[in-house]
Length: 104
Image (cartoon, rainbow, N blue to C red):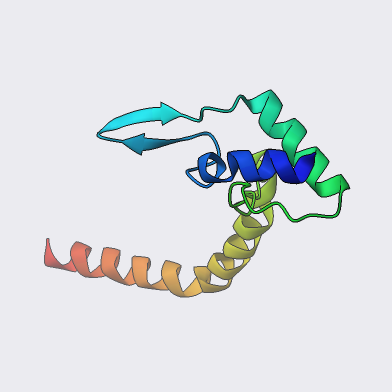
């Protein structure tokens, strides 16, 4: 039965999974989703191939947890880098302050 049902609806199923655009309008398929699912199931159980499914995209990987927790390690690493530069930065600041004091 699946082969006969598939032969009957093959042209309609080839138009799209849920429907298609025709003459600037969205046109739903003439076969209902329930009957489409039944036809798909029967075809697959009888050993046939089903080429009418939508193309599956790769799911987005959503980060779990709080952003502050994820970025804490990055912030700590940056703080360590800045603390290593701190004596040089302080020396430059004192030098600028001293030069400004001498100008006035």
